[in-house]
Amino acid sequence: MRDMKTLRLVLAMSAIATGASCGGGSTDDMKLFPVDDSGSGLRISQQEYRFGTSEVGDSTTETFVIANVGADTYPLNSLRVQGRDAAEFSVGDDALVLAPGDRYVFDVSFRPQSAGQKTASLDLDYDVIAGESEATVATEAVFYQAKELEQSGDLMAASGEYQRYVNAVPTDGNKTRAMVRLPLLAEADVYGTDQGFDSYRDALDARDHGDFDRALKLLNSVVEEYPDGYLADDARYMVGYIQITDLGEYATGLGSLDSLMDQYPNTSYADTALFSRAIAHAGLGQNESARAAIDTLLERHTAIQIGDLGYRWPKDSFVSRMWFEKSEAMLLDL
Image 1 (tube, one colour):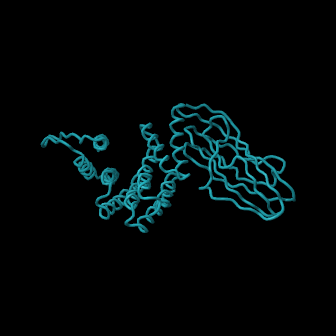
Image 2 (cartoon, rainbow, N blue to C red):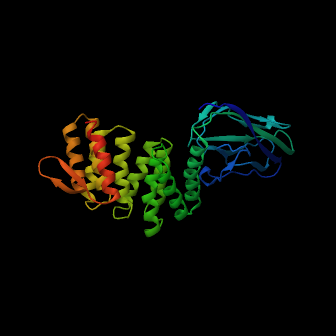
Image 3 (cartoon, rainbow, N blue to C red):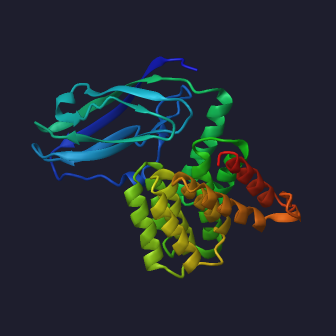
């Protein structure tokens, strides 16, 4: 549904020229605030910002983030500094579209030309393309609430919200993102947040933003630095998963899954590794090998099988029924 309307965000900024210059912080530490009271899914890292003091002629740069945490889409039309001292502030003016889950990181610079207090506003003009329904918006808000809880360090609460989101969404782009975080948070609740936890989580964030090279580098560092750590098999599996699912590097991904099973034969990722192997073989046109991987997966979850007729029934568990359903759907495509 397309229901376009134009709104405007105004971010107040002020600074004092004289004295020592001051710096900013990391975008990873920024808390996100609603941009207005309209129910918009846009969040910004600062509602009002004070640059502090700066020498006349010196330049101070601060980083801001605009994030889409809802289900609507936001075309950003323009980003401008306006107001009495606008000439002493500068910002890039990129036209772009923020889809659900996207973030835009940008810098604002302050270079005073004379002494005294300086003020300006940062105006963002954007359109809103409405999502499917209010229910969709509310459901997506659960995912982003979980992510904010995770970033704040409240991992147990984040895990509960991710699970609530997964249970509420039959199929959605953020469902996979939530599902790959659930085992991480569950293990962190048992083993703590060392042994590569931060690197693994940073890898998931990098993947969410499409930076697959950084994600792979971070995941490999977890395996190399903590080969006996509780996240080593998780990281090894995710390497193969990214190579197969995100990059389409099927042969390389198969090699990574082989390494997973060689190094960690008792990994809890055995089932999902078999399914990923089937995807990779299918991608290479090796349908017989794909069927063999699916058959092995089904055998692991079969309770009853009737001779050579091909009839079999899953074990009485949610996991077994799930793998039967996914496997049967894939076999139809092979």
